[in-house]
Length: 298
Length: 298
Image (cartoon, rainbow over all chains, first blue to last red):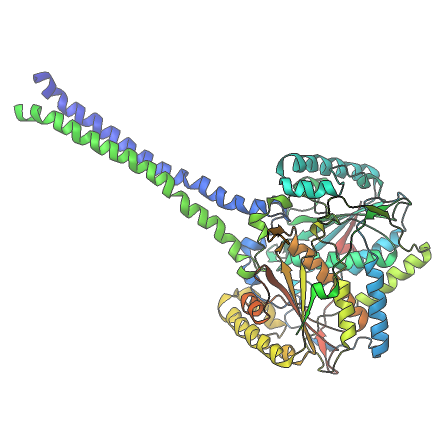
């Protein structure tokens, strides 16, 4: 009993230490247990089908300033002079004729996976990239870089990176539904055209720019801007009699960016193999929606 | 002393209870403290500058299946026949000529805010929308709806909605930086062209489709697809001698969708006022980047 009474303070001390330890521990768990919560929240965005981790749009987080709706053809100058603008104007009949002919030409465009290795004049590619560069962009940031690859070894390196990731996509990441959709269309992860096509055009979006003073300059709407620019590039390819297939390589962005030595503010958006169609090229026999199915007039 | 020794078991019991309580508490904090982490992660996406809450891409969260990189020209048919494809092919000189002429034409395009009220033949607008409809889309979902508004009262309702939100954007939501960027360019929230332009083209992206059996069908890459389609539409407008200014109305999406009676799976992406340029139209005197600034050749 005496022994016990002597031990009491010791017992109390020990228990106090235990409590203190537990208090500390519970504090730590509060902080650490937040981490998984955050990554969980963040990883939601990893599921975006048209944008992989690397393609994430930095402006999402940083540029609340982009909350403006108009794509000003502006730049950084203090006060920009305005000049008269009078583009060519055609008589109504000519307009109807031109718009019909342009539609007929564009309507012949198809995504082609069978590309001829025949060389294509470099000057044509230059004009096509210049045309893509005429697209509008948020605050006239022109947030695009077109990497044109014709060097065979680099093309092959690109193929290896894309096919490796593609196989993983098919085997692991893709939903059964999407896999079966593709199966119907006889596509797989073999991308022979990446070796064969005379040119690969890799389109990077610049999520931000670097000002002369080294400060970051937000590129508002950069992904939509670059996608619009890609639409004009596709029109220019079709106008020149060249073909491509629109691809957005998933999860290869970082590797391809390093391979092509692009800065970290540039994220891969599209990869277009470009050339003449192969002599035996085929395309799925599909139709486009009718005007009434895509247009509503009020 | 005896009292103390009697109290010892009680003391021990109390301390045990305290310890038990602390253990429980630390467990709870682990679970609860995850919640803020999640919401924190999720709310990030609300700040996307080029997409407001309404324009958020549903497929982001739902469609993991979209994890595929190739924009298959496919559809829902079980097995799609492949047919030979041989588009027009031009001699090299002709290609160079065509690509140069197309660039020259597109390079004359500018965003124009001063639009003439003169009527524009409806057939031209039809051809232009048809041209936009030839764009590629993820799994050939063609996830676009072009709402063409010429009815004056509806145009005015659109103007009221857009200007009201714009003023709020300017006054409250926008970062000072972006406001000053715009100030330099003399733009504000008055959008007279929404009344004046003979046509307003509102471009909706279909974040998903509805199958005959009523099931939802994911539209992979729908935002990029519709943006590319918009690029082809801008090219078609320029080809016809018409002008527009590319706008992505912020926070008006839901109101405009209701006004135009579009279904909930359609989200507004762009609003384009379309017409001839006003006789006294002016544009900011800005330049485009040179080829070397947008293209890298490897």
